[in-house]
Length: 316
Ligand SMILES: Nc1nc2c(ncn2[C@@H]2O[C@H](COP(=O)(O)OP(=O)(O)OP(=O)(O)O)[C@@H](O)[C@H]2O)c(=O)[nH]1
Image (cartoon, rainbow, N blue to C red; front, side, top):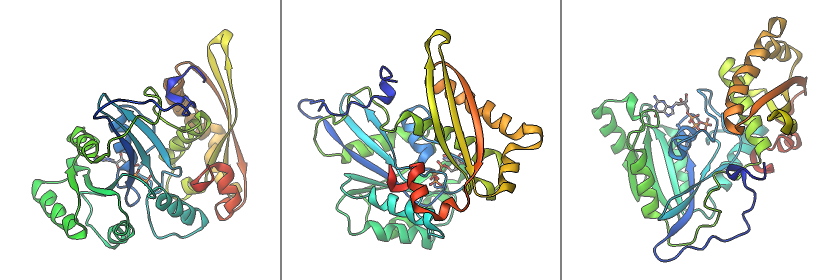
């Protein structure tokens, strides 16, 4: 992928800009399902992060880079913060909190359609001692009335003295540009740290595995999605046919889950493969041949080493 600017790995050069240029790190933080990854994709104008209605979708600290004439913002998506139940949960929390260190702006994303509760208070508590600028984002505005929004604004203002507050909808795009403007206003002066045509710092294999995992999250009910991990075993570009050949393994915790993922006569895994291939062809800009395997790896979510091997949480 060396010639694909989206996945350029050359971050050594400092792309110095003159004058009033601003740059810095913005971390999206909030409870699971608040709409962080969807906001990131809308800001970027394309799909870079995966999303689903299953809480705890995001397992990586994902960084996307938005460069305009006046600024460069490096946006860090984090796994939603929540009370941990297992090693994976603890690792995801640690990963999200680590992402708050030394960032210029923290964007606390709260779902405008859900009451602000103890979970949000707990997240904001973690922010109080940090020096960064703090912006409150009320997401999913398309789901609330103006009265509900006003009530939510008031509740959010009671949590903290924010440097800015924006209500937006990533679904309709409403006010997403206002969010970008507010953040850019809060960024300090500085050069572009990354090449101006680079959009994400994740290895392509990680993005591919995440796209596959997204399809599984969207295809099954609660129990199975949390039990899966996806790893790309090989990625090969066949120049003569202009296609990418991808082999990936879906790991589950139990035989019964393997059966569910494969489905009757292989129907479920075939459907996952078809859906994933569509996205991957768009991502890679070539035809894709996708070979998916399912393997059982007992209790991998309780095994910190395995979590790291998948690249979730801190282990990247
Ligand atoms: N109606 C509506 N739904 C939204 C909007 N933004 C996000 N959603 C939905 O909310 C759900 C969660 O969105 P995500 O972006 O995955 O949330 P997240 O905060 O990244 O979730 P975690 O990865 O669990 O931390 C998905 O089903 C989205 O489609 C919005 O502006 N309007």
